[in-house]
Amino acid sequence: MADDSAQQVRRESGGVLEVRNLVKDYKVRGAQKKIRAINDVSFTLEAGKTIALVGESGSGKSTIAKSIMQLVKPSEGQILLDGKPIARHGAGLRRYRKDVQMVFQDPFGSLNPFHPVGHHIERPLRIHRAVPEGMTIEEKVHELLERVNLTPAADIAPRRPHELSGGQRQRVAIARALAPGSRFLVADEPVSMLDVSIRLGVLNLLARLQRQENLGVLYITHDLATARHFSDEIMVMYRGDVVEQGPSDEVILNPQHEYTKTLLAAAPNPERIGQMRDEVRAEFAAAAAKD
Image (tube, rainbow, N blue to C red; front, side, top):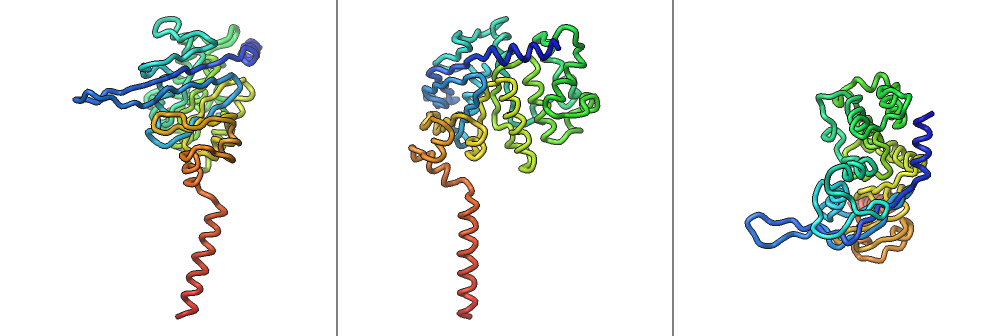
């Protein structure tokens, strides 16, 4: 009951994660010049909403994620939570990391192979003192595993990452991100390392958690199809700049920037594939008739 009350408070509390005029330059070793990875990027992520950040490799998507998580220090700009700049260190930074968590791309690389699943979820619970009164830490670990559909939790908790499938490992990573009581998730291509057959299940899980717990989700991807169906808004990045931004359907169905149009043209189109197959068959039939 205490845990249900805590979740209800989090759902009602909402919040806003804001990125203002973010710039990140990287120095080139042995040269005076710098490479600008992200250039004057601004957006606002509200609790209960999902923004998809779309672009090719090297466009700056992951640099934005790392800047939000304070894994890299921005060259310019601000990141604010509920209107307040985030602290650089100490208790203020710890409070920020309690509210804003990350789901990394590679679920095997982000989990320590020497520790069981229970340890990975127990650690943030202890660090952020996120176990409700009247509940044991083991009960909370099991509750989080069940929340991401890893059951029976008592069997999953003692296993090590290599004993799980890729989809199960990513669900553990999601449970770990939820453990502190986070309000915002930064999901950096969370299904790109998974088999195609299980990607939809993980995305549906994220979508359900976002609705039920009023989470704000920054979904980083190169897949326009999932960006449209799992996000409220799409931002298209090209060489560090946001070149197009708007409601998901509007960006996909009525793209304005040439780069967005190019991305859409590169996406597989089942109807066009079928048409091309029919054209090839017709050419072979015509050639056979001539012979």
